[in-house]
Length: 155
Image 1 (cartoon, rainbow, N blue to C red):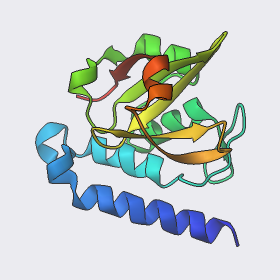
Image 2: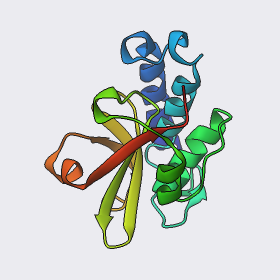
Image 3: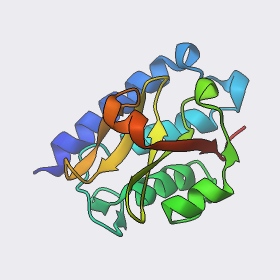
């Protein structure tokens, strides 16, 4: 029974992003829709429980499991671990972030976190504090203080 509300929320969010694609930089003029596919796949997981090492969409995801899943759904293979995703991605300047780009954070000793940009301000990620996949604003004191960079595997 819990799957239905999570699925509905993810589908509604995904549909909203796709409908606003022209405004949010997701249209076919900037990569043929791969960005929209990545964002839609990530948003479809909103509400999925967080679990360290999780890589089961709809059942249990960690931050890098979510981003890897979203990219795989768009036909793009990326590394499994967040630090490896950061190292292998094409760097993106903070002022040039687009939907589908990855944002990386250092949240503690030896702990790295990754999220996927949905628009110019929000990213979707598997949150350890909220114990589920959700949306968060990038420009908050907590995330700004921990931001280490951004990257992309998309044109």
